[in-house]
Image 1 (cartoon, rainbow, N blue to C red):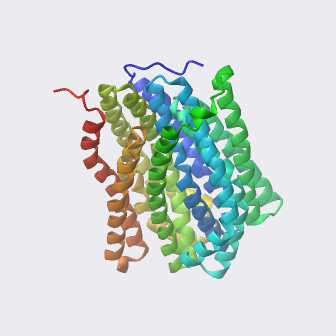
Image 2: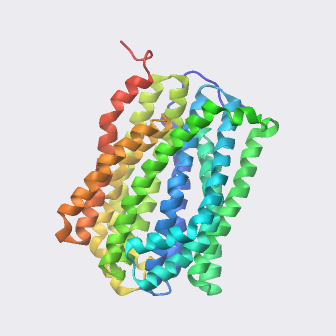
Image 3: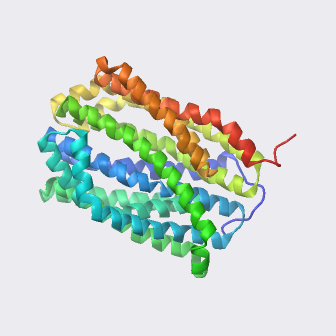
Amino acid sequence: MNFASAGRVEVTSRRFLAIALPATLAQMTTPLLGLVATGAIGRLGDAVLLGAVAVGALLFDFVFWVFGSLRAGTAGLTAQALGRDESVELRAVLYRALLITLAIGLTLIVLSVPFSHAAFALMGTGEGVHEAAALYFSVRILSAPFAIGNFVVLGWLIGIARTDIGLGLQILIAVVNAGMTVLLVLHWDFGIVGAALANVLAEITGTLFGLAAAARLMGANWRVPWRIVLDRKRMIETAAVNSDIMIRTGLLMAVLVFFTAQGARTDDVTLAANAVLYNIVMVTAFFLDGFATAAEQVCGQSVGARDHAGFRRAVRMTLAWGFGFAAPATLALMATGGAFIDVLATNPDVRAVGREFLPLAALTPLIGVAAFAYDGIYTGSTWARDMRNMMLPAVALYFLVWWLTLPLGNTGLWFAYLAFMAGRGLFQALRMPTLERRTFAGSLPA
């Protein structure tokens, strides 16, 4: 397959949307995995089990999203190789990331039991939630090599602007997960174990089909000499980019874990209500993140091709389309959020608390869209170290607002989260001009 050629990068609304819209739908399937499990367990009417799925899934997300940052690193490195017209390096990027994935996945399985028990104890969950969440986590962690591998394959497909295939793979994972969850939880009464096992089977299916798709795209030229795959300079670059993104993602997930832990310390109903709201909001957040995914590809390719004008057009498009969709998303949540709460939870107390905090949760897309946009720009440009560094003041802002609003309880917790999302976008926006001058030194206009 002829992936691309170096030179001026096409940055038009048509091409941007051709990448962004499939990526948008692909991103939306990710929170649907949590929504399916939350909805199936929620239909059982047990707030403890619903809280356990929330806590177990969040801890799982913390672990897998930290290492799932390999998707972002892979996308950026692949897009830049595309811009430089290095077809061999395009394939080598995927192989390096898959080798790292295998090592990480096996390590996570070995260390899962002591890690999960320590994490749940620190989160301060009740005994019932703790036991059920630990059981959920112990089963779902078996998908580790496959779940992270799917992130890597998706990142590679984003890097070569084949988000259409990425969408197909994500839909496949979501469909398998939904079907198996219904069978295992609602029909065969496997309970919380069934919710976790359904996810494992879905991730395995996605990995097998993803690798087959990548092999088909490469065709007869799929082989890459080991000396190139294991090239010391490239391995160091891959490790540096991905480790910085991992740290940044770890900080992000630490905020979410703290958010959940504070809800758990209030009561099981608040924990469950926050979980329902979080899953609803994440659907819109991943929808908006599709534009950030387009930015990863187009900005990365522009950096690789040294096309500064194309880079600037990509930045403007990312922000314009992002904000253009953020406002309607917030309005849609305001209007329809109550109905979604009723679908995901049958407990009347959980429904009541969910509706109480829905107005704050619904603001997340509008306030957080800049954070998603700049994440895509930074990732494609492989400004990973600066993306990590800009996360630090945003986290500090989160804890400051939380501390100042402690008397407000769960309301203050949502205020802190909104401040965190706003801070992420603001700090990256302030830093970007310096990084842009450094990256395109020699190609900037006088």
